[in-house]
Length: 389
Image 1 (cartoon, rainbow, N blue to C red):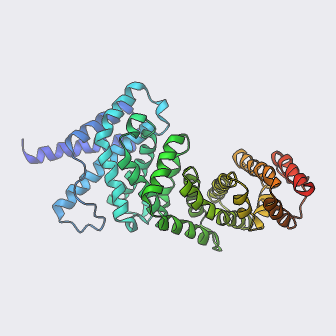
Image 2 (image 1 turned 135 degrees about the horizontal axis):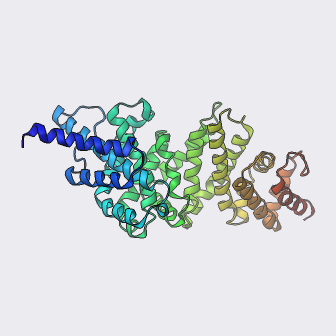
């Protein structure tokens, strides 16, 4: 058969795949059929990723076809599983699991492209050229798809290379402000604690302490800016939240040293004028929630950690002021847990001394009209014990 006819048929097949994955209404069977055909006919990208188009024209053409087809395969499967594996019929899930070993090298290829050329992904996907936009879409879909598939024990046991790559991509996305990538990372620990523990342990093992520290230092610098980048703050605090789940002593001690800085982040976020956009406010609230949770993990370790967090006397003042905002249930619950932990540890003189120094800075009253209802009792108990111990 002439090459021109074969090329035309291949192009037609690729268009069917792209339409099924990106454009047409969701049809799981059709997507899986097209993905299986593409995975069978096309090998994973083997030409090194090159966003600058410096490759010879034949190789560049081959790379473009491979990138687009692979990106479409990842997007198609991601569309099927995005609402959770439990929403998929066993037959469809079995077909996806069967395709996973051939899909995995393609996901890893795109993740490594970010590690190789992070500067190429700094622009928003809408501002990228066509080839790069497909690569960016594949990275986002690959992160989301991986976080869902890794919840299957049979896949998790054989995916250390993927988890390692994802951990490095997360750090690189934070270092280079690739928010369209870091935005997808929380899916790893929204529902699956075991996956979170594996992910946190991988970050600890494979990312040098200096790089983690630099990410935290940048978070503190970001929160000191006049015009705060709430997305960057949210992404940085989520990393803290993830690391705080690792129970190992070495990482715990490292986080202990960060508690005063996390308290400082809370103070800056509370004292800074609230964002004037809904997206900014959502990032602000999520940043506060993740930071409060990380702080509580540290406070629960005992009185020495609590005394360290209260060295900055504005922490209690920030907690007090924030308790008068319109809080989500998760935030109110986390603040109540922090107050209960502080109350229990008031038996220690070092904690009591720090608390009384901080209380001198408070001017409001617990029965203030704007005080959050679910926090009045925890605050009243805490103040009563602190003042009458």
